[in-house]
Amino acid sequence: MRNLSLSIAFTLAATALAAQDDHDHLSEAEGLRVVHAWTPATTGPDALIYMEIENDSETLQTLTGAETEDGQTAELVGFTYVDGVEEWQVLPGIPIGAGQHLDLAPRAAALRLSDVQTPLAEGDEIEIEVMFGDLHLDVHVAVEAQGATGHSHAGHNH
Amino acid sequence: MRQGSARAAAAFDLIVAAPGSEITVMLAAVYLQPSDVPLLTGDQYAEISADPDVALAAPIAFGDSYDGAPVVGTTADFVAHLAGDLAEGRIFATSTEAVAGAFATVPVGESFTPAHGHGAAAEDDAHAGSSYTVTGRMAPTGSPWDRAILVPIEGVWEVHGLANGHAPAAGDQIGPPFDAAYFPGTPAVLVRADALWGSYALQSRFTRPDMMAFFPGTVLAQMHGLMRDVREAMSLLAVVTQVLVTVSILAGLVILTRIFARGLALLRAIGAGRRFVFAVVWSYSATLIAAGSVIGLGLGWLAAMGFSRVITARTDVLVTANVTWTEVQLVAGFVSLTLILALLPALAATRRQLLTDLRN
Image (cartoon, rainbow over all chains, first blue to last red; front, side, top):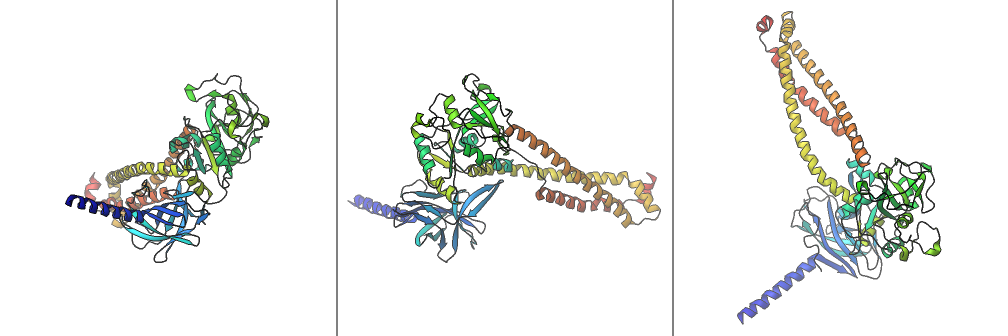
């Protein structure tokens, strides 16, 4: 009986942790889902934030940027490689059609947070509001290792 | 090399292909390195070309060659996108016409029969009875496409005994729209969007289990990132070499001051001061160092130009050698350091025993 109680308690605790984990990796509202938001640890003033966005709503949504809790804005940028020089160009917004998805990924597209005062270290967490026009979605961003190429939970279903 | 390969890929905004290796498809579709890759179907091509955000969806079909030059099937719109107006002649108007790359050896007006495959394994007689006539020549692009021969994709399908992308009722039509039911398949599709954001949206849209979409620039940047690590290791070797060169120069200057010791002693004997001798030795050293550095920079530039030409000839990627501020700053730093170090042998020259040097 004691073993059964322990098992139930452990299962409930694990479920609660998994739910918290899901909560950390997933944000959704009005059919929009943002999954696995992350950024590499930084040494300079810029942080590039990546994520997977799914538009399960029935209307087109346009990703326009993001802002942090203290009002700092993150602009939407796209990767370019001209004459062997890596650069990010500012984009006005990327429309995501109904039922479609958009992946912000390294050397593709990202949300760029400029003038980061304190370097972000692996294991840190930041909260941002991802903006789709007037619709704002609270998103939890995990800080991964400096050379990371994806979220540590990439590939998990949420 | 980095700039040249990036410029060669500049016209290829987004490549869509069947799932597989991005590097393999990029090398095949952008740099025309032959590879066997799975094909996109007619339905997949139709879906790509019908996307409202797609301004250009050009199929790229490779696999044949002529006299060592790749014969690539595509559309007239792709030729215009890649090289602009033709330098000579006109664009192909039938499935048996072709446009030569800027430096392809086949002249305008000549007919040829393509071989199946590339290099030593090419089957010269596989397409016997089929031929293309060259009607025009593209302007240079600085890419491997300058050595290629471009034909309508319908021609590639026809010489392989396949449907030509159009229903029989379409007659001799070439170019889009294609009929998915008569579309034999294509290894890659170049996709271009008009809107600034379009390529990024399309890349996500066409990345799915049955097809992949990638930016050649992204794949290239990743490859260059790996090469950068090798370059940094070589830079470290270069620094070590420079230290050895600097030590050698100092040793050479010390030896020179000993060789000229009697002359310097005579100068002092007829009344020249230590500062004058110091200035003579240091100025002489400075002249040698400055002249050697300028000559070295020039020889380095000539060597880089030679290597660039060899690489361009072997890869068809236009590689140019430039003396940039980085090289100038490197030489300036080296000259400054050695000029400061040259003060030591100049100082040593003023400390020598006058009578001993005069007797030698």
